[in-house]
Length: 112
Length: 114
Figure 1 (tube, rainbow over the protein chains, first blue to last red):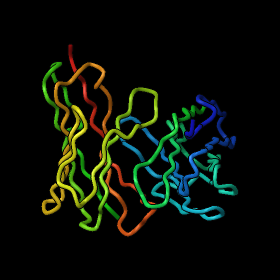
Figure 2: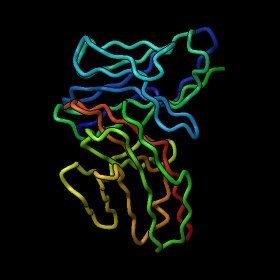
Figure 3: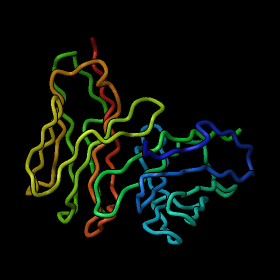
């Protein structure tokens, strides 16, 4: 079955450490997105990529970095520069021509 | 960019009653309006969507209406059931983009009481 997979489901990080969240899709979708979700804040866009080797900042990109070396993969690195990284992170993808996103099941990151 | 407002932020209904969630958008060029349901601890799931050339779309107990002139769209759930309890998000597309960045509302927590 086609889908989008995020791993790990839960992640704990010590302050000052970088951590990378994985997102892989086998839907042959062209565009991929990373969102951050905090209670009562809805979905806020971090980064997105519409084509391999190209990506754009979203609304809250500071303290995050991404890469898009393969169409199927869009990993997100939460750097030590991110002041408040504890959140639920969602990855999504969509095909050319528009239409709705397919979301992954999310990664809950906790800084300890 | 696009601005999407969603109301109410919380909604409680009795099982069997109807629920309505409303959204407004700012960019008249937006042409795609999906609705997502998010259960606790999971990713959002697309439940219904509508394009700007259609005024209404229905799928069993769920319907969406779109008023382009007023720039608002609504989700209607009839005969609600406890399993409808979730957070619902509306969204509007980015103009002119076939890869459609979506702009999301802040969500509505729907609770259906048995």
